[in-house]
Length: 321
Image (cartoon, rainbow, N blue to C red; front, top):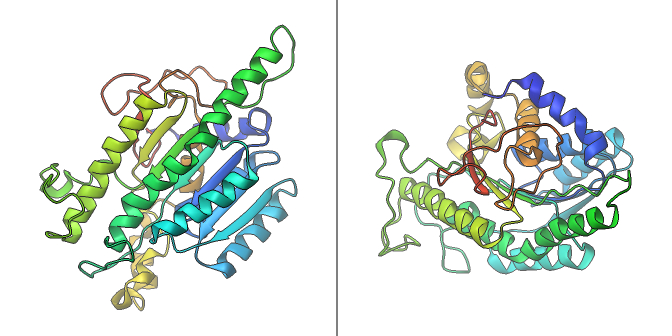
């Protein structure tokens, strides 16, 4: 476990080490994504923050808060139902038209449901899309901007060689918040059904969780190998009081009561945002090429998901360990 004081100390250094970051938060109008976006606005100078979500009122409130805490922050809301993949493409087109680089892609989309298969216009299950397909589509579409962030930092470093000028932060990172180990929790098999990857014929909620987790793991590991200047983090959030229970009709009336009863066992939302900002910026999770952070401490690179230190892809617990 990384001590919260150490988390806060690291995040405080971002004021000098991480100016002008460009970050996209998918699912960014509530919960962990919003809390992390607010932490980024709180700790970094002149960030450009994109919030992707569905709720205009929530986005307006979030942007007002960001501007109040950090007048140098530039915050933009992109409204979209990303359970439809063409909408993911449209959001990415908008971002690519406005930005030349992207330092951080942070993703938490999902929803609580007791339904079975809930088919989208793409012929896929909605929950599965939000937990896997949409996230991977964002990565593929925005990878050129993530690569440009790392290469841009290299160019600045070359230009500044022999001078005292601080090069631009080299952060190039993807963080997907779900659970890298959900497929083996509670006695799961940890296996994919290779004959039905989309689960069209064998869908259950537990299988959906397992497939989204495992396929996400494999995808991120593959991307880390192919794109060694960008680091990839699959993070487990643990219990965080995000209000997600309100999406379950039967639980709406009980959400406040359940939140009160479970709060001693849950991570406070603001703390979760601070911890995820640490995971998104620390040099403990470098790219395979040994780059992709903005901190200047002397952390030893973490062991990656494949068992190799500094592999570029990492499974990270709620406490950033």
